[in-house]
Image 1 (cartoon, one colour):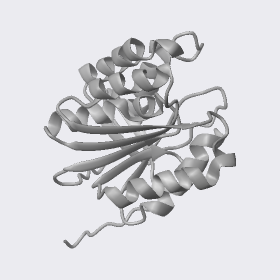
Image 2: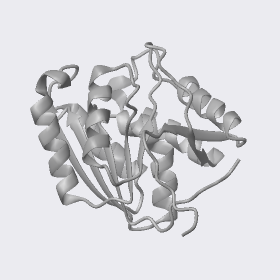
Image 3: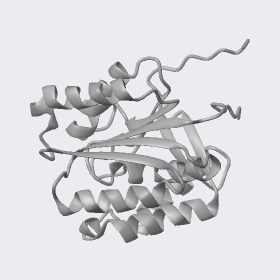
Length: 215
């Protein structure tokens, strides 16, 4: 398996439809990146949950998932489960994010995600950030929409454990959900680790990738 890097990372963008999406889909990757690149700028945008207890959960959680980073979080107040009906507002939020950031990497939902909020946001991200590396994270759920990823970020065992611990610690509003548990999160990381020949990993989809093999 070939391992490719991105070089020095200085700025990344992380986007989620809902509070906890970013942490569930890419929490281990955020921990890995922020620990490896002190002072990394992280611009995070979440489209729903603003003005509720979930906004506070998200602020505390992402601060923990981005240790030592320059974190700038925006949580909007669009209605959960109704983002396709608010297309213009979502598009405006994404375009504003693009206008004020110049990231080396974008973490966002997958375009193949079965959830309408995730899927719609993912399609806008790949259009707005056309000249950027966009990694589409996966979120396990009852839809059974997990696909065959093509990009893997290995996670040190302690990082995988930290991710699970932080998810349980910072999102008490989600603990009642039957899928929100240690076995689900660590189990998926173990499966993706097997696929990438490591112990644990997070996996991502890529819509388009340009390489410069002669550079």
